[in-house]
Image (cartoon, rainbow, N blue to C red; front, side, top):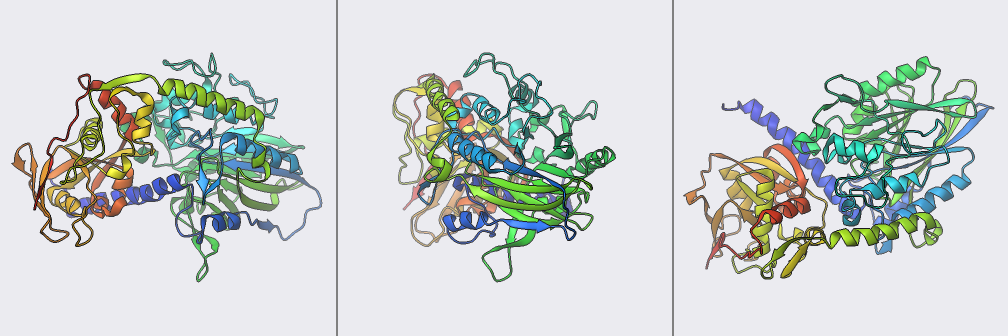
Length: 594
């Protein structure tokens, strides 16, 4: 069936929205920095500005209030051990993060709650990923008080609360529930036997079972602070399917965020709860003030539309997902100010929010909020938490043991060294793995994303993360033959003879070094036949390329994106299926004239 021009334009707009998000998040995730222009200047300056508190107080003063402190992290991605830096300074790791959070608890005036806004696991550093991300849950458990207990036996005074993000669902509902509720993985046990799961509640109002339309997790929880209630409502981004393999949400559906939250707020209000915190795995972009490098009170992106529709009872929104820092006051549906925060990802920062709640009206009447960086070379970072540090050491030891497991064998070195045409043996292998993983006509991989060679002999689990350490998902796209020609021609961005050669699978092509940049590709072949410029083909790329990374902007014009597994996982699965030992070589997919 032929699509109408309007349908094609709608598909292209949808793809551009998804892929623009991918550009922002995959680059921000690698740098640990915000994107969107709100935090201009150096990385250090951006983090210093984020620590300046914003404050609000109701016009009418309340004499009798209770104090509450919220400490919120987001997008932790099981970053257990050290290794991250900002401008050359060490930052983050679970022991350092724990030290900061415990120091913040010690100085808090009132009761403290520690929350995570999703993607606490998934897209993780290799050592934790090889242990099925169980260490990420175990670290958060260590932040709990005596009322946080395994097996769903946590009490109403437990100080921890979490929500699911899209990455919790990377391996489907079953594995997400195992991580949360406990039980050994089929390849375990790892650090616990049996693995205990979360010692705290997960909440989510808009993730429901398709068969029953009932929430998978409790939609909300209420905590009492010196006799005054405060409600917490969770939500997952509505378009989680966009960022997950197609079968990851089997048996589940995700409802509209604002509608689901507002329904819970109405139920809480009926119970006399008027101080409400929404924890949403969705983010936006804090825009710069006009003519200033400093952030303003303008929020853009998907989260802005959600906050604008929220019930006036919602006082705070703790956000995540986009890895973009924001700390500002935004009008909700009632025209009241709602505090919206998102902290630095991967444990390199947290949001510290102080609330005052009226004893009589039970509403938030004052607040102060800042985003704190967890520097490892100053303050609490100089004294990492001892218990968490012991766990991190165990993660390293056990992760190294799992990483050493042999999966395949190489008959000879498989290297990134390319010939004059721009093709390498390892590039061919990686591209083939990605094409097989997504079942597409073609695959394209940027060579900078292949960061190590494969030595002869044993190939281990850890080798895959060494070869492709970036946590990038594969993306299936639809492109015309004309767009594929344009993509290959974008390998040369200047009139010089140098190019950035994509490694390819499923096609071969010839290029002429004497032709001008933008017109160097002479011919493209598929199965021995010329590529038809007007035909549609399916292609596999990673999310960095899909978003136009590396100046391959034509990929942002592709249609119907479908997200697949991580690039390292695709290589892992493919190499296991190859005849052993693997004898990969340059296959002549790229040919050069002149």
